[in-house]
Length: 310
Length: 129
Image 1: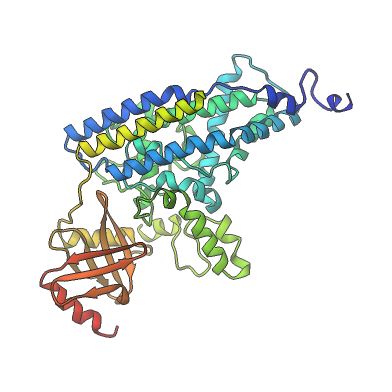
Image 2: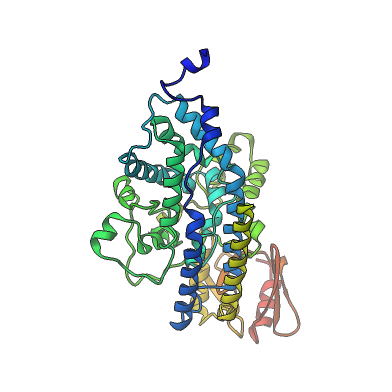
């Protein structure tokens, strides 16, 4: 009784909410469309003589990482829901499931995704979980499925906690996040050029996201948005795709391996090695500073590369 | 049980897509067009940049060995349909009596056929920097 009084009127204890919690996950329903669209892109690439669009071993790694991420997602779904339910419970209000909360939740979830994604490129700890999505030198629809196995371990869910804290239902947040993920699938392609200007102005598109995956100096650490490109325009990280510039995809220092485990964990191991070797005062910097940072200046960050190639 | 069926279905789809990508011939080895391409790849792909002053291309275009003005060595090797570039030290390169050069980078040993240039590189690598 005492414990119930600490909570919002009408709200169950967060553990109870967690027990009853369910959410609509659209990803399983989208999988057949993912498969069909990859088949279509393979045929498009073959018919148009674009034989470097795909590489069968690279595709195998991408799809294996995608499959593994489903397992990892299932493994940590309960814990993620639990954290969101806890944040929702301690928050000052609950919006419930009113219709207007859905578009608002989707919009704010996309904003949360922008900041997660930006940190995933600017903080090595988060980069270690995200790097495998960028480790392919190819840019095709299978690359979209090259998802992280260690997002939960990297505490990426922290970026969505504010949504639950301000009152959005945890199930709604996860459903919106899933739709955001599905949206981002189709933009991983070279088969689509530029779309109408109004669409390119508001939405993330294949053109914008090619920039994000490119390793060309001017494109490094740009276009972090998930669904709406407005966040990059707003926060000064937008870069348009330039016509006539050949895109190079992947990592600044290419992985050079088709080993799935290496793709999934190589940056975590590299962080461990760097922290062991570094002098004490620099150890945490190897975890928390931007990828490419080194205490002796022997490596390059994306800002340094951009500066060098100006 | 439903989740297991879903995962089994996804695994089957994954196998199908990999088979299809192989069946459609997406397993080519990239070919370097010329020295300039090798020099450009090294310049872009090596941390801190790499200004090659010498470059020898594999006879099939399947890689290259490069050196910059400071005597640093770099190798370009095929990886799937693209290339990777790595800095290497002299001890990682073996030049035999013929045209073949063996290069070792972490996790991989590769052979380049540098043709007549191999022996010139052998002499150059033997010289102290």
